[in-house]
Image 1 (cartoon, rainbow, N blue to C red):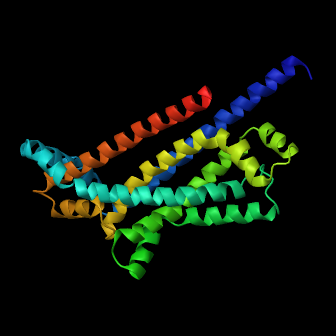
Image 2: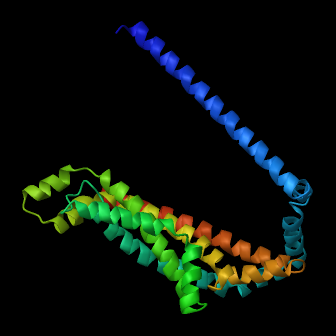
Image 3: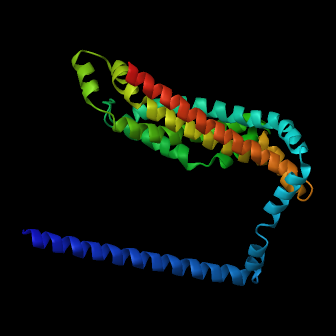
Length: 283
């Protein structure tokens, strides 16, 4: 096969790719247009009227927060305990779920010599099942059994975290260099020793990044679960949003605390990863 023939085949493949992409985009536009037409006919055109008022409520929140003046920061301090409760739920759930995820990840990685191999498939299906159930559904089920408290929220978030982080951790494990593992095995190291000294030092920085990212996600999940009676900042948001007008300054204070906590977690994640990587490089 000559170079000209290869070039012509590449050009033909590129044209087919562009054609398929164009057809896909046109089909998506057609589906969206037909869906919009159906929705508009079902609600008598109120969809467009609602779009005109889309920014009315956010604007009201900002206006009331501005009018509160220095009292806004007093509201921030007032809701600080609710934020701490939400962070406690998210932190405990991330620690418990993260610890379970590490175990599941090492047992569900195909390149780490897990025996018997059927364990890998079983563990992967377990992680799939844990990710299949949204935190909200699990929390509602547990609240029905255990009552309204932060405990059902923590269990629900930890359950989903174990499945989600386990999947990510196992993919990190499968990209680890096999040379240290083989070297330890040739020296007579058992499976746990190979994982401890051959795999964990390689994957720990990525584990930490995913762990902190999951903590950030769990803070938001814990806030959402507050809407169904799990406590924390979500319960306060349900109250202030339910009041509508007159509670915009409180809603803004709660959003401010949430955004501030996400910023802090992101900075902490970057700091911890840099320390871990620099310490590893220094050693």
